[in-house]
Amino acid sequence: MGVEVVVEGLGKSFGTQAIWRDVTLTLPAGEVSVLLGPSGTGKSVFLKCLIGLLRPERGRVLINGVDLCTCAERDTYEIRKLFGVLFQDGALFGSMSVYDNIAFPLREHTRKSEKEVNRIVMSKVDMVGMLGAERKLPGEISGGMRKRAGLARALVLDPSIILCDEPDSGLDPVRTALLSQLLIDLNAQLDATILIVTHNITVARTVPDNLGMLFRRELVLFGPRELLLTSDVPVVAQLLNGRKNGPIGMSEERDTAEDPALPPEDPDNVRGIVPQLEPTPGLPRRDAVRRRKLRLMQSLHTLPTPARQAVLTTMTPTDLDDYDTWRRRTSAIPIATRKTTTPTTRVEEPAPRSRWWSKR
Ligand SMILES: Nc1ncnc2c1ncn2[C@@H]1O[C@H](COP(=O)(O)OP(=O)(O)OP(=O)(O)O)[C@@H](O)[C@H]1O
Image 1: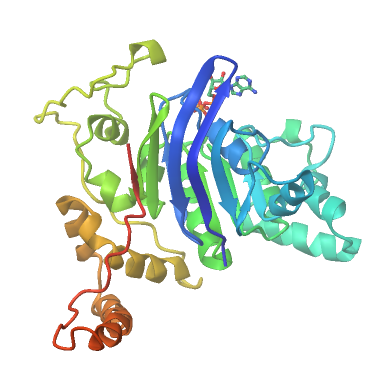
Image 2 (image 1 turned 30 degrees about the vertical axis):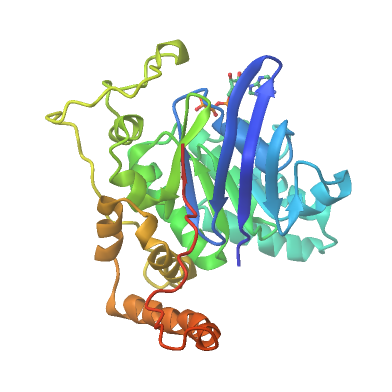
């Protein structure tokens, strides 16, 4: 199963340029999350901080209890093995074939035989739909294929955490839709924690379990997809609808500090929940979906009404039964505890779980 990534109070600057400050969020284990934000808001820098390629000045990144911001080089190296990363440009070695690029982490970090390497590489080549192109050089294939080759390379060590920096940039709408499906299928097969940085609104609306947004050097919001897709926060609504009117300007200097109200009659306003992609028929169901539903029910009371209603519409009778079982199990503890002091008190609700989503 994937690994939870906990980010607490993270801050990063380059010299006097503050990129973002006080970023706090949790990527739940095995779930798919998307990070949005206008160009230049530091999304790629954030990914690099998560894998320890850049060191933030403030805050913590906790993975399996290890703080990547302060741990020794040796621990960083070990933790990094949990990650598979698709960099923005694919980051392939230009002089190596696609096959050798994908085989590289296996040859570098494992002692597998060439036969075993071949089996793994070809299975990943197949997975990303590149059979027949594996002997080509990166310069001989399209940008979209380079992205998919980069994704195949990110997967060869069976990562618990997959980071994808703009996997859809430069892809046509059909290939973007296929890539979205591929990411959901991967999550169903691997149950890995996935974080995708994208500018693509359709990907943001249809792929993730959780959405977040960076703007003006801060994390505006991070939480379940229902929270952002029903959000009235102007910058979130502007970005998710791809509109020109709103706080986001052409350049950072033109971004406005206040959140001007959006015109309610805007015909482009397509706010609301769209169905999330399901794994391709024949693949396993996503384990994350059930875990996430239980977690959402536990923290339902912390969500704004529109998000809460949207979450409730996704619940099946089985989900509600799961929640009921959990409630009975957890409330048994306080009832037993209270018996000694106030035996007549019935505890109706489990202790409220602290809010796990983040708001500026
Ligand atoms: N190594 C570095 N040294 C100095 N500045 C850097 C470095 N890496 C990134 N930056 C700066 O950090 C800011 C954020 O860059 P980043 O690439 O993370 O943005 P982004 O949100 O991913 O943008 P885009 O969506 O356009 O890819 C930019 O102003 C960039 O110039």
